[in-house]
Image (cartoon, rainbow, N blue to C red; front, side):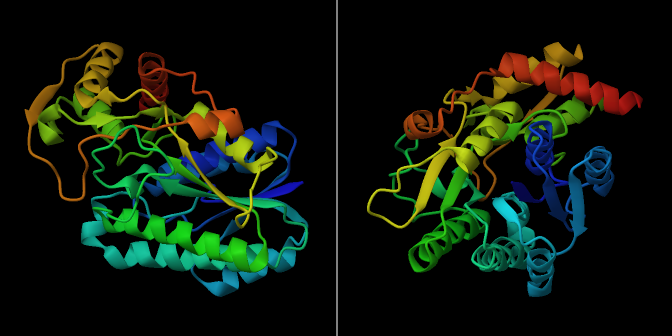
Amino acid sequence: MTVLVTGAAGFIGFHVAAALLDAGRPVVGIDNLDPYYDVALKEARLALLLARPGFTFVRGDLAEPATMEGVVADHPGITGIVHLAAQAGVRYSLENPRAYVRANVSGHLEMLEAARRLPALTRMVYASTSSVYGDNAKRPYAVTDPVERPVSLYAATKRADELMSRVYAHLYGIPLVGLRFFTVYGPWGRPDMAYFLFARAILEGRPIRLFGNGELLRDFTYIDDIVAGVLAALDRPLDWGDEPPHRLFNLGNNRPEPVTRLVALLEAALGRKAIVEPTGMQPGDVAATAADIAESTRDLGFAPRTPLEVGIPAFVEWLRGRNTA
């Protein structure tokens, strides 16, 4: 019944671990508290988890083989893995490509090796990304669409994770589920994400840069909906067909929105106007993301319920509380 959650001090990992604890399931969380963004935010998330019964924390680097060897030795009764630890962010992959190969490729390999050494394991769920679709002109993106033309190293490492997982499912029969997340947002979110950066800039009276001249479309997906999809991917019986036990699913809101609408909702929730500076596209970015969630709905019961006009005020309420704490 014990679930291992990697990246437990991260945005999605924190919420998944909390939901598992809410359900009475013991959680072993692992994180290296990487300083890619504000470590104080990660420590604040972690403090909330550490205060709860049933949570055990391991600080370590997944790319180091000894880290997961120790976890397997100390917790042989782990029955499920939710692997969310990664080096995130498209643009930072242009600055520090080695960090992505180490965390996302080497780290994922160590998780697969750990999975095949855990005797009680029934399934491993891992994070992929909508970025694997590249700038595909066919929308919405379906899991059956070609994904061989990524436009960022981040996307390439995540596609490598999917291929490695299929191999391990084939060789060792490990049930593996990859989830392609679409622009996840909400309370306790990542401060490098656009909605978080915009909110801070509006509050501080600084200009915001709208890449793609504000014409980008994103399938913004609220964190509670993502958590529901992750838990379903971990627990729901799945039909593996005649293939190795490896499935891929999109987790998106199925409702692409222009980034200008995001800004307008932030302005309304914050009660302040944004100073907007339209600019061109960033390298590695795509014009639009849109999730086809037909398979996720059919097989996982995935049904996102939180529109942007509800999710953004919830995020702003949390942010105001953080700023006044």
